[in-house]
Length: 254
Image 1: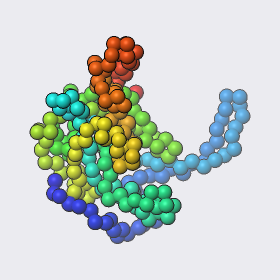
Image 2: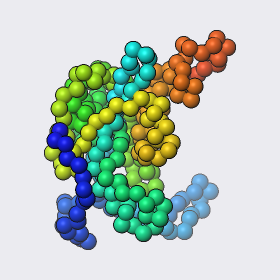
Image 3: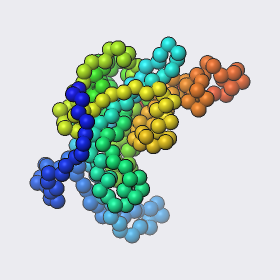
Image 4: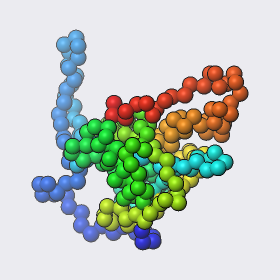
């Protein structure tokens, strides 16, 4: 991908009202009340629900293990306008006073209509891996990493499903994204797993699905980041007590 570095994002037009079918996000503004099992009711309240064109999404942890048994995880660094424009919000600016020209996160993409089954989710993951990271993988190589999680259940019903796949950095090919300006200049990097988690803890990596995906990968592989050891390196009495969650046995679609 062409080496483009972001200087700034400029707003050309800010439309308060969009024409029908021009929305990327649809907002449902609902008036609700709760009905309880004893027959009582809550007072009426308002709830706003965001709906995206995609149904749910899939996030993929690309990884490789070197000769020293160190785990390396792949992250995509690219432009995210919602994070960038935090700088213009006076209260959010007080909280972190950062300008997010790029965000590091897992390769991910939205599920389209008809992509409801495990096999379809896997196929979508393969497409995103090729577009966003330049690796060609087969859906049979993908490993589910447990069940789906809500991204922000207070406003959005989207679930994220996790996959992992082992790749060889030597087999990476050029990647070009989906053609959107938001994907121009993106780069793909490998970080050692413990280093990536440290960056999550210190705030250099601030994407929640990324930290969760990396931790699930470690659990699936039988690696304990806090101790920097593999399960088979534990002393016998500790190894017996180690509960290895077999995330790969979950089909990843709840």
